[in-house]
Image 1: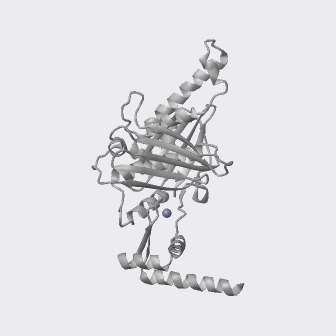
Image 2 (image 1 turned 30 degrees about the vertical axis):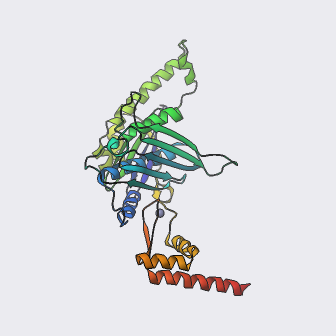
Image 3 (image 1 turned 60 degrees about the vertical axis):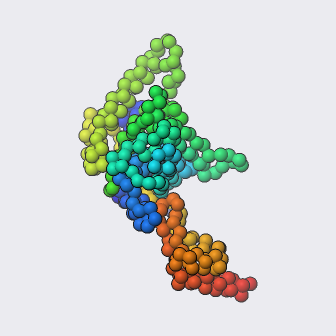
Length: 329
Ligand SMILES: [Zn+2]
């Protein structure tokens, strides 16, 4: 089952989170694979999207914010768009669009940053907005300060967290056909950290510097985690292997109804209502042309099919409903 684990390093201003998405991730892949127009994701794109799903789940859990978090990459290569949306209750969905094919060993830059024009955007859309309020969006490029293409998504997002949230963050991300997983380590903001900028060395400053070293040590340990370990080992083993020397407080994992899980607002009933709203003439002309009505959800890829019999039934039901509605009045 998909799980999110949170933990604190005792006495240190460092916290962490580890997410493992299994059933949630499988459902995302299953819906896409069932799409007869696009088919399953090629492996490199699958792994990139899985890393994005893990990262977006960690980021949503990390911020105190009541609204959806959307992580998207607008690519300039064969992958035009990859999007993950995570709600505050950790329900999530994801999709990506690819034009053409990908080399088997395609890296991040080959997919979305061929001409250094790719962008990564994080959008926070509050549930309750005051009139005219826009969602908050932060955009980071897919190249570093020297203009060199970045090859790891984790690095792009670490850059974003530092730039937009002023938070030192370490991310390790990985995904394959069965698991999308991520480890996040973060230095908690220290009170009076601004004092560090002054030249006067105070007791506070010394403390802050010492704490920076704690974060760096834990960050290095986190970065030593290998892809196979993150994907293949259980959470207890991973945390023990990395941090066995660090006293740690762990919290109850978030799972099931409280944890990360797939959810998309699309449904067959919803598509049926849309077809009815088109009207019988329009629906019949599509049937004449293509033999059936096929509607794909743009957020998860699943396709809904209505053959001529299904479609005729929709309009019979709709007529019956409106009639019983009329006689009731
Ligand atoms: Zn959907």
